[in-house]
Length: 268
Ligand SMILES: [Zn+2]
Ligand SMILES: [Zn+2]
Image (tube, rainbow, N blue to C red; front, side, top):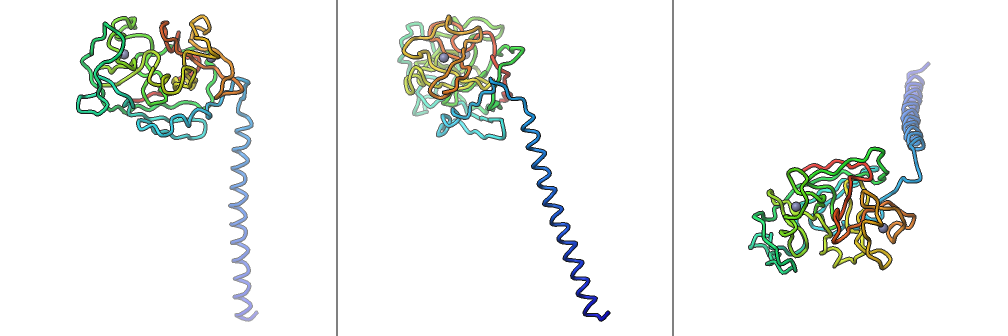
């Protein structure tokens, strides 16, 4: 065998080895794809496996909000700064406005609006929880303008809102002692802007909150279950979805006896 033939044979075997390595990595890659497919086909899918993707774009263009989607998880972060006027803005802020609401008993609380850093991790596919979890004091959801929802109680031991209500500003929100602005009841800035039957935000379990009117009639507690929601179709969800409603003058206002679904993480 000449030197030239030896070199040719070496090159030939080298090419075969490269080809085997290349094909091997290709087969391996296909193999992992197959595994992913198997995983997703094995996921339990029930008739109540809702998908809240249709309402995510309502958070687009809101200064306070940034969000990302990873698989089945929506991560929303908010500065919690309202996009509307309030007497709770520092007087130096252009959105500062003296109280001009209708409550004769209004009194300004000592707190002022401050930038927050609150993150919700919410399932894009909310389902009814088997064991319902009660809401806690502090954020329980996020309105479509980035302001957090609170429940129907005041601290420290779940007292009624009776005294707090008199410190709600002209858009029915107020800040607590770290300057965290929040809505316990109907966010009238949003129903004024988008309509009384509009999407208003999400609770931490991923189920949407809607305005106080549906098909021309005002929703009352009698129309809702103990969590303050019910299931049917609407403009955003033609196939139907469980959703909460705000009831303007009826306690518990936004949420009743806890989350209908399983709440995601809330960090602040
Ligand atoms: Zn409050
Ligand atoms: Zn409804």
